[in-house]
Image 1 (spheres, rainbow, N blue to C red):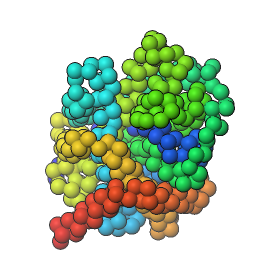
Image 2: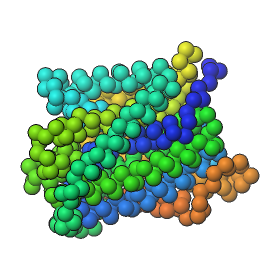
Image 3: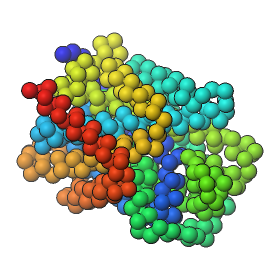
Image 4: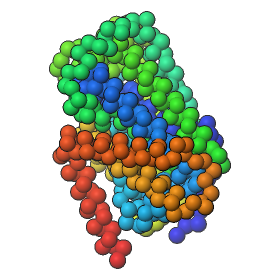
Length: 434
């Protein structure tokens, strides 16, 4: 096994940029489809509950990441607290989340390019960005993090610009119009789309080994990232719906028919028209949000797969650090191949749902590991301790479990696929470990 170590270059600001960057594409597309399920009130209820889960999760996960700053994230925490079998399941869940979210975002990036260059097929652009950003991550974490900082700042600025432009047209009456069309069932059905607002922030833990001072820097990066994302979520949700009602940012025609993955341009077109220079600026710069999340998740996924390879739960070559670049190059390439296969399936909605199943599994296992470690290793050095323990991790377990059940009810087909992935992977793990 290679003795080359990952390079320690990340500052708290870089960790903030990575945390926000992992997630920020969820502000630009996808979340509005939850409005079709639950209306404004149903989606708002789902979002508030999910936001509570992510805030409590972020504080709880920060304790684990500071105490055990390893690139494997939940895999390392679960192995120490719950044993190798549960750790393997946690590692597979984390891999599913981080490997299958980027293909959906890559497809959206391809769609953006196709809107400006109709002669370039969506799939072609998606493959090109996969190759480009995998290569950037292989070159080095410093270059990757610097790029992520720049692109994340631009994406945040663009969201604030959008809010400022549509706010004069805000009408509170639009928030209560047809607000709860499907009752409580709609609120439960909207949960996956509310999760899409925040999916991926836990990726900060996967670059813990590359932080200059993990015990000090991770809690700062996590804390400022979740605060930024919570504020952006509320601003974008309220301002976008407040322009003309939820139907205007769900359906391309404004009433019904084909749904859209572009809620912000739909809202802005009601204010400026679709020929205004600021409208085109939003669409152009909106690409930065997609790129930030795509690039950040590739970075986090590489570290997750690397740690599984280093533990021999995946092929051992995936756990080798490149001597030249000091990055997990083989893990990054392996993830890219899986991502391209998912991309060519063309089933982006199902891919997103599969990724959410992995994330929820990760959250529940991580919180159980936190409680177990508190009881079994009270002397473990914890530079950061979650406040209001054990309330915070218990809240995550309850909301995460309910969300998983809801996901299974409304997406049983994808749930079956996810269950088979876990079952087959675990069976192979037991066979080859013997």
